[in-house]
Amino acid sequence: MEKSSPRRPDEVESVFALTLEVIHSALVGYYQLTEDEARGAEEDLYVWFQRLSRRGGAGHMPAKLLRISLLSAACQYGRSFQLWKLGGEKSPDAHLNELLAREPDEVAGDLDRRFKEDRS
Image (cartoon, rainbow, N blue to C red; front, side, top):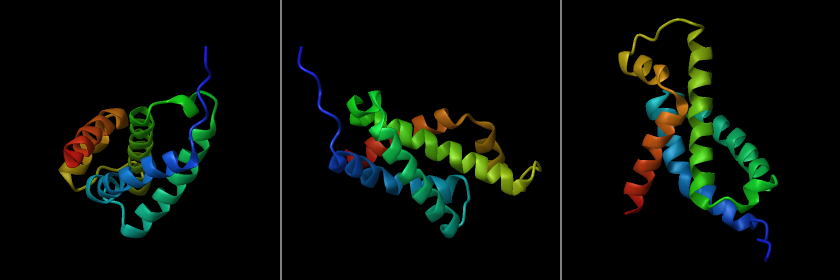
């Protein structure tokens, strides 16, 4: 049985680059982070994603699973950051409160569908 080779760095860069627009839109539009906060989040997510891609099993994950993992991490980041900013209080924005009540993986699934629609 032939072993798969580890994921090439350019593949990881490609997955991140192709997903970045959706991530940025979610952080700013959904989670209402400022542009500066979103850029900081994107930098943190990039470092995390690089580490994830070098881990044992992740090197052999299909690009779709890497993308979903990245979207899920972005949603978790946006949710956690916004909850921290709100300091345990409700937002005056009902839509934001509804989003914050959802699980990040559920929102990530919505974003992945949007990603696929944008690529069609």
